Image 1 (cartoon, each protein chain N blue to C red):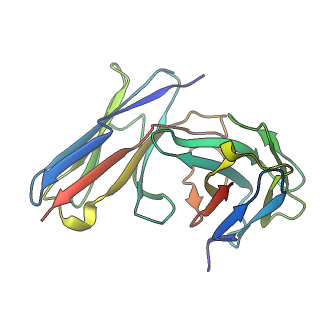
Image 2: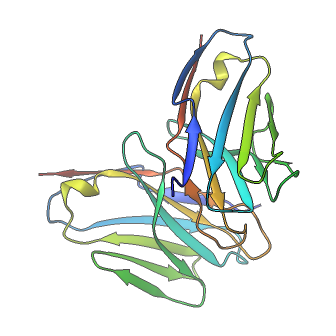
Length: 112
Length: 113
């Protein structure tokens, strides 16, 4: 089955810095890669996703890149703000599968 | 729309007691999921359903049962709670299972003593 590794487990940055979270996946058939943000005491919420026919996608301060050859994808957050502090999960899934495989999460802390 | 709701928000059980967690969604989604979240372990799938009347096992199904009698509801049961089932439980739903956004509920925090 699919295996998704996520690094780092904890990331601490100063407000205004950039943050990068990386995930690798094992199944070359995976073709959908969502990122979820989980704020304290809440359920995860989708913030951005990318499909395998696209190499990069941006939405204001966040972007996701995908390298199919290396089987890894990354979340980039620029100009971080304290409200970006949360746990971020990456996931991977493929056509015909009902179940995404999640990474173990990254706790991002943005210091004012 | 309320989205995905879960009841209760918090519960304390004694070892051996039973309980049912309720998940409801008002988005007419076909697929529903139950996850548990433990520190350092991410989200692990317990059971899921691809439509009314269907259920299937996920990664960690032992000790849990589920039912999907109505499309909008997905129930998770613990027949005989164990301390190892202390966790935060999240329900999620999606329009279809393939390459679709999952919408999560706010979670149920369960403590088994």
